Length: 266
Image 1 (cartoon, rainbow, N blue to C red):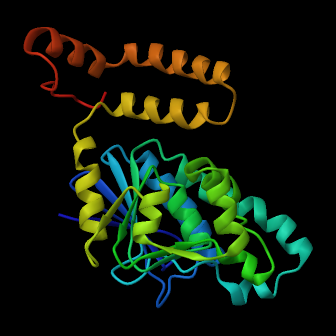
Image 2 (tube, one colour):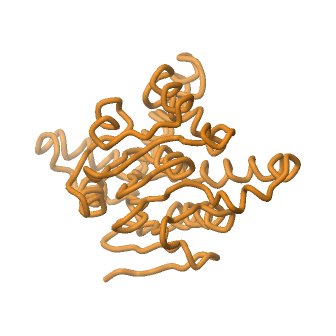
């Protein structure tokens, strides 16, 4: 049975079903990511991070559109000094999504543009419907990505491809997004959420703390040089030896071979 947790915004809610949480954006008709929605996404990230029941997370904008970008009418009224104060808060909200200590996947139908694409970039994986369109069109408004796009996009697809998308503002379809590594799977239209849930289903009964440690090691390691990354890995590797699942996994391997452990998530 699905359990729903409301956030401070009527446009964002958390739905938990069979240990998979869906952070649902629902602001008709194009899911513009206003300040209210941005803050609510950060709040939702905190909720799914803290809920012990949640093993994996899907971010979804519904059957028609993921998120077509920030609320431009709202931004049009903002001054330089307004944005000096607001920009770090946008990034902080999205960073809370990126730091959810569980596997995450963006389920993309329709448009994922600007801040919408930047939100998808915060996830570990991205599933796109065949008719989806992704991009960073901020340059067409005379600005640049401000919610992590210039940084996360280049880390994901490489510097040249990121510059192409950011400099031109062009949209890419699902197949091109797959070719350049922007998405991980393309699915039929209308099936992005179902496909995303199936993708993370494998993690529901996995070793939760080992998954958390692996995500931390990979993500934090990319922020520095190799030596720093190796130090982070060593710390996380040693840390999981304190978990019950490490004992279960190794005992099961010795007794029954690989892939048969019944992890407890502790």
